[in-house]
Length: 97
Figure 1 (spheres, rainbow, N blue to C red):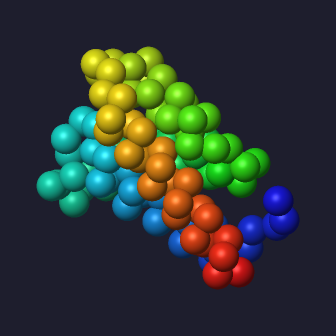
Figure 2 (figure 1 turned 180 degrees about the vertical axis):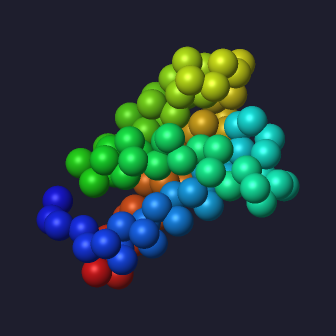
Figure 3 (figure 1 turned 60 degrees about the vertical axis):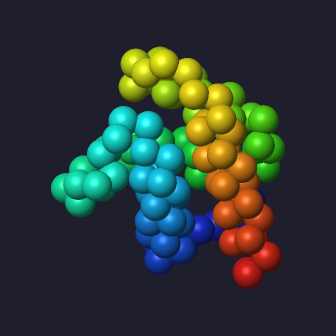
């Protein structure tokens, strides 16, 4: 897994935040002041990708958060798209180190 320096951690968090704002389950992406609405998901997602979670594992976790944390109806396609984007992002990021 390795140690993540502070600058890398900030970049990773920012990039995951951008992916979450694209997913935008609660529909707040158009308001800049709402940029932190999904921050509760950043650390758990980073922990999962760092441990090697596959798309299915990420999808399951995101789907549970949508329903259990945000109280929304399921949206398997949107959650799968986010999981795939996160998995691809992490793979690309690892390829550049």
